[in-house]
Length: 142
Image 1 (spheres, rainbow, N blue to C red):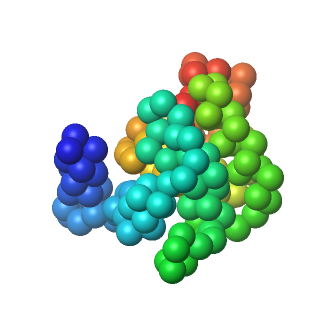
Image 2 (image 1 turned 60 degrees about the vertical axis):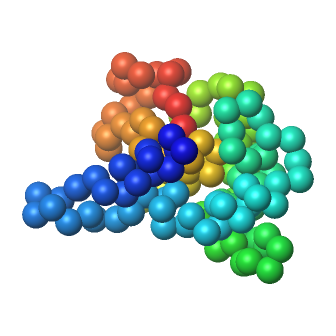
């Protein structure tokens, strides 16, 4: 129940100065897919997660859940997503570094929406902040 309230609160958050929401959070936009994966779960779910790492991979990279097509959220190297999920499942921090426009924020949001159900908990840096300059180095969490 608390997760649903958090999702509703996040969905109703006003992002633009004119009061319009720029874009719904991932867990709202893809609620049907997330709900289907959670309900169809057949694998072990880590503590604090809402679905297994395999289901998170399906949510991110696309696939099938029963008759429902899961749309790919990330078009790239699936192995990179597997490494990110493996890092998170072992309760370690995930720090994504790369050039602007390479889907780091997008991937972080969707990973968090899949395993946690609330993508507003993502910690994001800014363009031009290097790993050495960051005060949150080593503690960034998806």
